[in-house]
Image 1 (cartoon, rainbow, N blue to C red):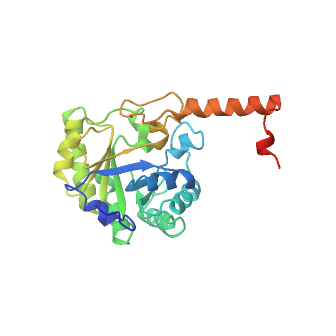
Image 2 (cartoon, rainbow, N blue to C red):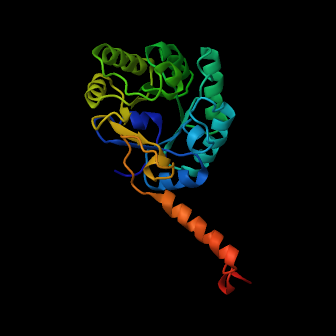
Image 3 (cartoon, rainbow, N blue to C red):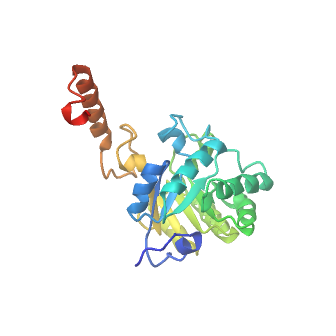
Length: 267
């Protein structure tokens, strides 16, 4: 399949049943460029940057201005991937008008191609309003990190039958509201499979098993750049953390003992 000039929300939707969707997060120009060059179709500027880039305990403190700043950098680096930005906590929950204004800034000011909002059936009016106003929406159900206070932490969702039924209804409502795809986070693979079969738009899993239409992971997790913590659903494709620390320690040593810069680094 030839690479498109630019992935768009409709092109991502059209992949359902044809081709797996490959997604990753990115938060800056340099990493976005590499992710894009690897052929990743969808790049999410996740509010997970609160932890990976800003040192927060969770996503809740992240502001819209921070998301705009990082999204603009990613948009400059990603020439082909669809760039999706997270609407952070309390930037879309207060009212539909608030959601429209803030999502519009992500598109107009930061260059995003779509926004992501968390929530199920109760979020359908917001999703519908955004889509009707020309703003593509990536849905997100299951474990929704902006609701961890209510959920009691990062826990697998949908283990009980009534919870599974609720998530299935949520997925249908989000799809019917016009989302071009839905992230399914931290749920049993059987439930994710049932949801994938029940909705007409692609599902993108993170900790939701192999039966989704695509997968997404946090870039820092797969590269070993976020400490020793590794969720069960993450596969490490590299472990750069120790290598980076070793390089930095070697640099410190050589500067300290005077061996850097040497003749080859001097004019």
